[in-house]
Amino acid sequence: TSCLVTKVLFDESGAEPVATGVEYIVGDKIYQASKSPNPASGRRTKVFAKHDVILAGGTFNTPQMLMASGVGPKEDLQRFADETPGYKVIVDLPGVGANLQDRYEVSVVSKTEDNLKIVENCQFKSSLSDPCYAQWALGSGPYTSNGGIIGMFKKSKASLANPDLFIFLLPTDFHGYFPGYSKTVAAAKNSTTWAILKTHSQNRGGRVSLKSLDPTVRPLINFKYYEDGTDAEGNALEGGVAAVNDDLEAVVSGVEFVREITASASTTLAILDITAELPKGPAGFSAPYFQEVIPGKSINKKDKLRDWVRRNSWGHHACGTCKMGESSDPMAVVDSKFRVLGTKNLRIVDASVFPRIPGYFIASSIYTMSERATDEILEERGLQRRVKV
Image 1 (cartoon, rainbow, N blue to C red):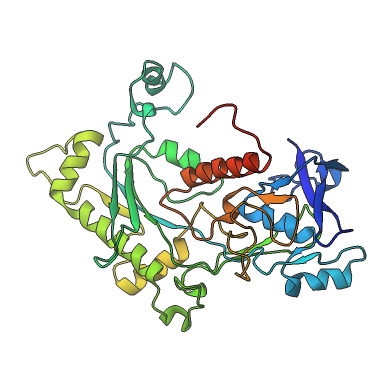
Image 2 (cartoon, rainbow, N blue to C red; image 1 turned 90 degrees about the horizontal axis):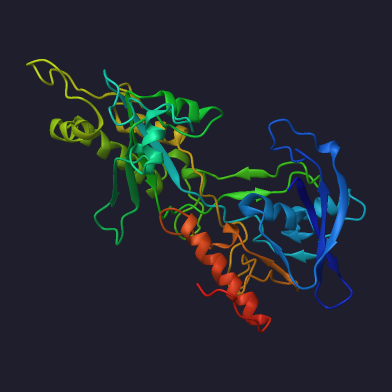
């Protein structure tokens, strides 16, 4: 849309501030998260709402918008009020920006001597000159799948009520998101990746903080991974790297598990049956067919593996920074109808409202939550859906 919301506009004449609209900047690449930002290029304007202002800026930008509007933890925002004429704390909501959560993910990457036959001829182009694209156009071939060969749920500890690891195998080299990662994925035809995803993570100690009142400046984001975070009850962990951390131990156990799988000759044969030609020669498997390159053979002791997991984990399901809760909860930001506490006509409908990180993958929970918000808003207005879902 080439628009960046700078703040929510409030009518403060009543007992509670009423959201009336938003101020925003129109222009390309205004936000400093852009690859080539140009924040000075935009022009400011305002838009006003007949009913509710609904924020859906996401886990990072929704709390940024609220805090820039004077809604958030007074303890943190007061310094901006002291330094900036015209800015003030309108609603003291300590939970804005707190409770940041995410999943942990790492990859175990191995290489083979031969290309994997499932992707051997794939060029990863949207052209019929790509044999795999031509197959896809006819409804077959590897492009009709999500790329996963094997997927499984696993408990990191037998005592758990539900699996807390999702582990899947990919016919490529995928070890995180970085500029150009997709080119690495497309080029790696002789690699396999076991992706280990820690679900139901315990840590909820992360935080998004306001760095500047300039809306083009990114907020401070600190996930407080592993021992820097909290336990399942939200209590800060003590003891630094010596602290017992269930999230860390779970990811480590996942890496150990897939290493055992890869080392199994029977598993290797099963994978090769659908991914590559069988090794040639009467000797068969004189050496492991899959040679681990990430984390690699040097990461061969548990302490080394723990440290590698700490340094190499990533996530992409951030949520929780404007959590839903009862008004008696001092850290709640919205109520069960998605209304921002202490205000009127202001709602939030995005992943920031989750009190705890949901399920395994977050997308379906976001869709469900959004449908629920739709029902709440329509019911409040005495309206019904045109199309029932």
